[in-house]
Length: 419
Image (cartoon, rainbow, N blue to C red; front, side):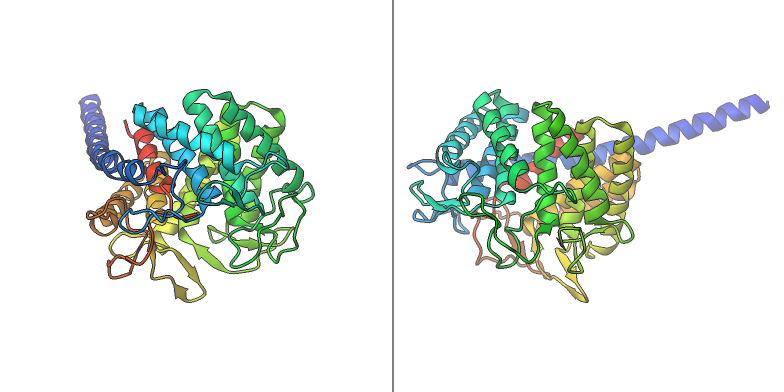
């Protein structure tokens, strides 16, 4: 009788767990269905339709309605992200139009953005492709690595891999800090000049190290190591995981420190919720690619803690993620890229922990995106939305900083994460 009772209890527990997992999987499957529909029917369609420039490459600026500013300069960051987006889309979706666009992006980037004399990537070129702003920074160059390595993953084109390796070597030569680890660079530093001139001579800047630079160094080194098994690269990737986990991230607060000295002393107290949640899953991805189980386990612990804090502090009552907080001031702007990273970061935390609160958080953010952020008139997403849900229609759909990379990557991550 006792054994029968135990069998009944065990059967009930197994059945209950199976039902719960089935419900969660159904929720995840519906989430995937909707996000992929938006990816293929809206986001990628918009960029494929509006961004190619008949004179070559892609327009540097698209207005709110998708019309081009034909005389606008073309940004190195935007174009590197175009290489990444269409390459990744082709690799996962196998649609030939994405291959055509990936090759177009790669060819234009190699022909116009790579400095054949001094190496690395130009910051901008003119509308007709001549070098314009030839100053350099780590940020734009690591995105060149990220985009070109993805093109190699998708196509096997060795020219892309060779160009990425050459840029990586420039980064090690000029931007890597052998004394304290990590990389210098501050293209995003509020009005400061970029770090290097064309010849890679260094300027003095107030914040030589930043979270944002090193975050994207991490993703670039990760993608390069996927396709180029170099021992020196492996050491730099492992060090960058450590730097981001223990120098940039404050594990007492589970927020990253944004602006730092050479020896990693924090200079500003700003919580950037979008960057934090983005870092949470990029860190785990880096550890997975590195292939060290002990490091992977630690990054998973970190990712879940970061996601928990962002869920508690950074999500508003409707499910959208706030941009940042400085002192008592909380930004009232909701940005497209922050929402994209929130969905991926919460899904990652759910997959690691099995805690349904993270899946629910991803769904709530996606529901907010559907209601407030998708531009159902002109296509793609609004770049920024006010706290009352009204879109900021005075912005652009494409420029150096407005791109298809974040929300496209959200869709592509969902494809790889949810069966």
